[in-house]
Structures are given as C-alpha cells and as structure tokens.
Length: 463
Image 1 (cartoon, rainbow, N blue to C red):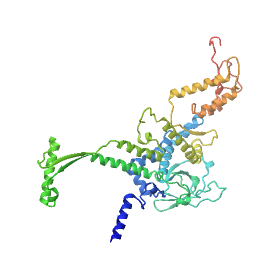
Image 2 (cartoon, one colour; image 1 turned 45 degrees about the horizontal axis):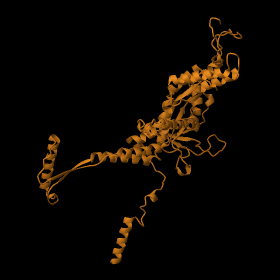
Image 3 (cartoon, one colour; image 1 turned 180 degrees about the vertical axis):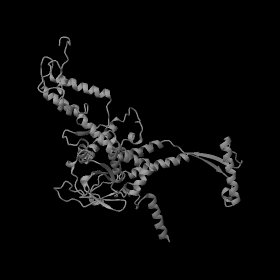
Image 4 (cartoon, rainbow, N blue to C red; image 1 turned 30 degrees about the horizontal axis):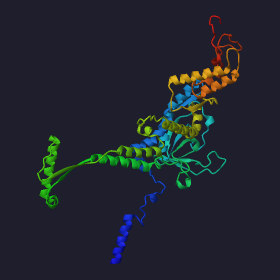
C-alpha cells in the first residue's frame, strides 16, 4: 500500500512540476499535412468574412485596373468591344477567385469546332471566331494522364481533361482549349494526391489555423463583453433549500421581480439578510490582442492589414504607403507571372476574333494599381518632353543626341508608360490627306515624333 501511495505521490509531483511528461509547449510544435475538404472550404468561405476576403481581395485587385492595349485607335476599340462582349474581365475574375478557393479553375475557349478533344487552331480564327468563355472549376474538370514527352508543349501537364456534364456524359477537352488558373502551388505532386499535377491547392490551407485563432479570439472577446458585469446575491440557506421545488420557484419569482424593478426604476430591493455584490471584468488591452491575431492573419494571407480590414493606418506618422507598395508589387507579379502566360493563347484568339487578323504590333500591358492624377501625368509628360529638347541641343544647332535616335526612344517611352495610347501605330500610319512625294512647307511643324523637338519661333510675325 505504501508503495502504491508512493507511486501516486510521485506521479502527482511529476505532473505538477511537468517532469517526465510531454507538456513542454516548445516541444509540442510539429507540422502535419493540412487536410481541408471542399465542404470545409465552402463552409469557411460562405460562413466567415476573413476566409472570403483572403480569397477575393488579391483576385479582385489583379483584375481591378485590367489592361491597356497598345495598337491603332480602331484596333483598340474593336478589341475592347470584344472583351466586353465576352465579359472577359469578369470571367477572369471569377476563374481566378475560384482557383484561389478550390485550388484550380479554367476558362473554356468556346469556338465552332465540333470536337473539343482536338488541339485549338489559333491561326484559323477569323472575325467573331471566339464564341464564348465558360468558367470551370477543379471539381468539374478531371485531369488526364501526364504528358511525359520532354519535346511536347504540355510536358508535365495533363494530355487531356475530362468534363462530366449534368446528365453524366463525359467530354474530353484538349488543354489548348483551356486557360488554366492555379491556386497555391503544390510543392510536389507525389504528396498532393489526384490531379495535383494539374492544379494547386486552396489558399486557405496554409492560413486556416491563423484564421480560426483570430475568429476564436474575436468570439471569446464578444462573450467576455456580455460577461463583463455580473451581479452576485448571497442568499442565506440557499444550498440547503435548493432541493425543494417550491423554494426554487419562489426564488426564481423573487429575483425575476427584483430584476424587473431594478430595470424600470434603477432600484434593487433585497432582504436585509441578503448580500449584494457586483463583479466587473476589465476589457483593457483586448483590442491589442485581437489586432495581434489579425496581423498574423494578414501576414499569412500576404495582404496588408489596412487592405484586409479596410481601415486607415494607425500610429504616429503612419501612412501605410510602404505596405501598399509592397502589396501592389505582389499583385503585379501575379499579373505578369501567372495571368499573362495563362492568357497568351486566349489573347491570340481575342485579337483575331476582334480585328480579323493578327497584327504583330498589337500587345497589352497591365495597368498599374497606383494611378497617378491627371496633373501628375501631365507634369511627367512635360518633364520628359523638356528633357528630350535639352538632349537634342540648343537653337544654335548643337546636337547632343541624333534627332532620329532620340525621337524613337521618346516614342518608346510614351508607349510603354501609356502616356499616349496608340502613338506607335499612329506614327506608322501615313497621312492619307497628303499627296505622295509632296514636301511640307519649311515653316510647318514636322508630323510624327520629331514634332516634339521643334522650337517655337521667337517672332511669329517674322516667320
């Protein structure tokens, strides 16, 4: 008996001192492969605002300013009209959002071809050849066998996809007819399960624990607010009489009436033998705790707190400019590294479907998220033009840089920064109003890019 007591006492002592146990908090941190089902993903997206914002915000910001087309004026109008007809901007937003949510989605390029299992012939496109765009998710598209031919364009990717319709009919789709968007990158398809070579995983997988901790903290703080003030009444012989049903009913009626009187008149009526006390919980510091969890969520989602929560920066001299600049750089990287390669084939179809041909001079650039005001753009434009005139030389004829070289560089600068959309195509188009081989008057300003270097006459009357 003494030995048993000694063992129990030793176990309790070890438990109290945490010796011989695995209660070390630092030793309890380990990582396991996240298992997040589609049902959990949908429930989190529909039932909580943090998961929805983490999924929606980067996709929305990537499509918010869209693209600027560099082409002739009539070509730009035709291409933008084709984009509106197909709702390309909205379809890309929907596909990228579902890709972030489920791990993958795609745009099906709808044409008049009868067999979607055949490769898409982009060069055969004519005016109006692009019929529709359909958003399909990873849940609807099953990836086929992996292409193991290193010489193939689709090496390491599925040779085909299988779409299961509502009536159970299966349709084979060639990958050239899909604009694929992936979610978070899978480190290795060997650990990703089925379809991991074709899709990624939900962006919520790595952020789920941080989201749950923040939501739990917010819920506990909300409960604490309701428990912040508790009234305590000590009743003589309460425990001894609580087993009597009549006594319980009398107590409930008694304090229900007392609570009603207090709520109406602000006066609490008690018996002389009863003792009343009130306990209040301190709510100081709870905001800092909650914001600390929100900052962890923002870091996990790679979204600034000001953008995630929709609040202004706080703190002395805090502007949030650096955080937003880093975030905009990330969005630009997503556009250039993810969206642009995915949309290459679709853009070839789009240009041909809009204009009827493929002009190699037509291309697009992503509009910056940080838009300058009209005054700032005008100031930059004027500064570049003045700098070009200074580099060209003074009126005395001192030429620092050749006019043609400087003119071409300046045109490229204006085209690249979007100051003059369609400038490059307009310069290459000859003026139809002029007769061939007819020289222009010497006093007339030169058309084209060289016009920017023309110096105004000192005396208009003399010229």
